[in-house]
Length: 327
Image 1 (cartoon, rainbow, N blue to C red):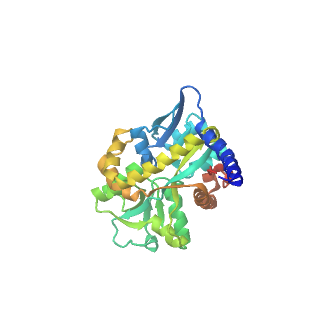
Image 2 (image 1 turned 120 degrees about the vertical axis):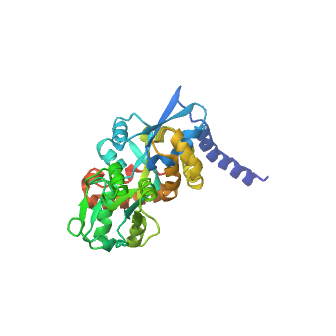
Image 3 (image 1 turned 90 degrees about the horizontal axis):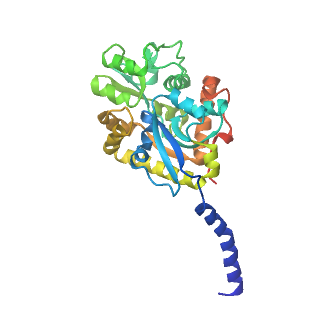
């Protein structure tokens, strides 16, 4: 080895060694436990292999997993900073950022899974909804906003050109469709599977395809995201990197093994039947996206929600400080 080559080797070693050592020396407080929460239902299913297998993320750190039964409960825990990481509906991080900042979006973990079901044979495309009654589970929730937005893109006013009925919450609305009390309604999975299994109602409009047709894209809109407390991101980047990799792997395994994943869901605190979950998984559109792609996707989505109602994103579209982009 000549002198110049040796000098270059030493310089490279001096640059790389501190970086390697920094990762290797990540230390944690005694009995350090990170609290991770998944929202009950389709939003949290992608994390199920982490719940079940409790992977090792390094010496000195453990993860405690829990299921939040409702978005309101989860939002309250996040506002109090009592949990460190969570997977939740896509609009909630914007609200949290406006009211109780302290978390960043680390990844989008699921895309849209909204569908219109009907037993009315005359409905097969968006324009067929004109003059009809369309049931929706909650005014102001994602199914309502997304339906209104897409109708507007077709030149259809949801409040003037059809009748939007919010008489039932989602569970009761599903029963109403199955029982023949409601003909046409918007649902996410797993309600779609439940309804089509127990009634003659069928999927007539796929809102994801509708979105892609309007936008001229091959990607639908984000529906679930994973957030991490800022102090965890700043103090323990190696742990975060390992956790995100494991989460990405869990999502992949769920989509590839719906039968196995469905059984794990019932065994780990989620209130979903295994048979329905197994059939619903292919339509859940679970997909892991991080970095700038996740930021750009959510920025567009929040912009749309802001146009519909600024309150849905806390009064303004969040800036880049909402997002964690690994360097």
